[in-house]
Image 1: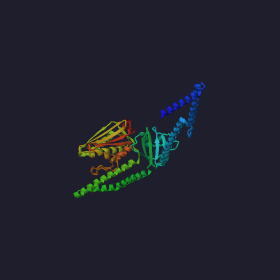
Image 2: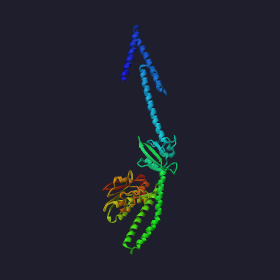
Image 3: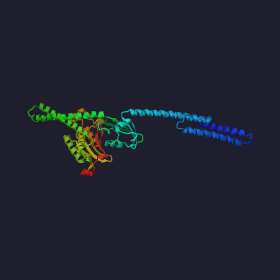
Image 4: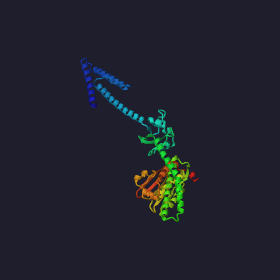
Length: 437
């Protein structure tokens, strides 16, 4: 096409030159005639260029200016391309308009945040759920507008594997579910959903379990007391009755243990952070738990060892941390074979503090790992019954770690053993001077 235009332009110039030369030849002024012809041709070309320039600069360009020949084709092609681009732009604007209309109709808030954490766009639901204002908050850091310590830690931490639930900044009785997704070059998309109803149902469940557990303690204490009295005076009873009373006492003790664990879970879920937050030195705490583990092992003869970095201490509740670590150690002892080995390690690095409990037991299949911290979840009901477990130990571990800004990492290979690692953030590590004091 370019070659065709060039040939046509060359043909036009040759025609102008030839015509002017023929016109000036009878008068003996061929050069002057050619110069005048080229001047006129240049003037016409400049006129078309100026009209084209004016048309392109027009804010609402309509049809292109009229022209003939080569210039007419150029203007027609430009006009057709302009109309094609305009149709594409209208289609794109229609798609964008429909997308914006659909997001405006959502009850969930959608928020776009750039790589610096500044607000770029949000839908109408974000104004209702988070109180964002248009256009005052545009370009503002989102952490300045959603002022909640847990949200700041979650958003700035960059670990968005799990969603965040917290009270609404506008109403303490409402609860929000926040999920962050990365896209582009460091940009983030926030999806905020009102989960007040689900939170109320969950709270009703927790209150029900806590109240029922509390109400069961009194009759269970009475039953246990009478069973102890009967067993103390069962010297003249038949072996059949003594065996029945012993089984009743064993099951009553197991129920008491379950109720105690349920009440502990209810207390752990009542607040976000432990009230008695103070430095807890790990070495004596873990040594005491291992001593209890050896007593639990008894004649089975498990080998328990401790390797702890000297002076390492965590900020938190000693009672809750003891419950967390003892559940892991006792589980390792219960499920390890006779003469098995249980290793406990505690150390710190750039990522924080870590406490690992490793055993050489039967291991856990990978399909069970995501559900291990659920309440009452058991791999094998018969095995759990034989060990006296309640199915609440790892749920307690999970909630204690959440309250101490930690997480649980589980690595297990069937037939080779398991390793449960408690990971704590660096800010949970207490200063050694404070720990030693």
